[in-house]
Structure formats: C-alpha cells, structure tokens
Image (spheres, rainbow, N blue to C red):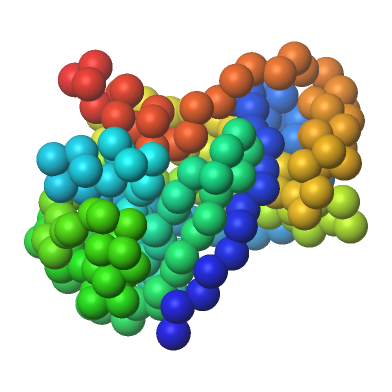
Length: 195
C-alpha cells in the first residue's frame, strides 16, 4: 500500500558542541534509531527531475522505499511503499533495484521511464527524535561511505511560517548560528566525489 505525504522541514549543520547540547536539552532518556539509507538512480534521470529514490532500513527491522520530489524550498512530496526487510537487504546487497510497477507507472505519467536503477550513494544515520506540539525535532549523526561524518538538526513542521520561527528558537537554544545544510543525498554525493 502506497502512502503519500508532504514533508516540510528546516535543517542546519551543527558543530559537535551544539549537537551534544541538543542531545542534553531535548533527547535525554530517548533511544537512538539506526537508519541505513541507500539512494538509487539511472544515469542521473531522477536527480535531473528533482527526484530521489531511497530504500531505508530502520533498526534493520523495518524497510521502506520512498520517492522524494521537490515541491519548493523546505518541502518535498514523499511516496512510500513498505518493503519486506529481507527483500530490502537483498536489493541493497545486489546494488540494483527493479522499480515496483506502481512507482514505475507514477513516474511514466510524468514522462520518466525507468525500470531498473543502480545504487548511487549510501550512508547510515544515528537519529534521535522528539515529538513536540510545534514540530518533530530530529538530531542526526550521519556517517558516509568514505568515512566522513556530519551532524544535523532537522525540524519537521506542519506550517512553514510558524515552523521557521520555532526552528530559529531551537537554534537560539543551542547558541548556534544557522549553517545551511544541503540534503543528505547532496552531501553524500559531495563526499563520494572527494574519494
């Protein structure tokens, strides 16, 4: 069963000090979530159309396939299909993905014809999440395949105007300035190119 949603978020790269402060302020007593993220494409067709396709494993137990489509600054449409964890592991090991028919048809309607894709990049994330009335606060420690590591604050919101104000409040709590964070896929591609 396909699920579609719109993700609205603000993000900022953090220093080690600000990340540790965020853990102390918001995540005390919470357990981390471990994510394995593998992105697929074929000759840049998806990235040229401002789309990304990801398999995510959550704690090696839950798997999902997500098509992300940019809707504008700070907004993405996500179309997600659940996957069997063993099936996802097999796809990840093979480094190739045969696009499920419903996603293939969806993309075909937009003039994109793909059937099989290859792994583009992968990375792992140690994530902490805290649900608040204003937003979902997320702290990520991201490890890329070349050994690079970065730290990020994400603030997922329902309303971009109120959410921006809340995000700025979070940065003030951390006593840190806004440091633009390209999305993790862009950072992974950047780090891969440095190899």
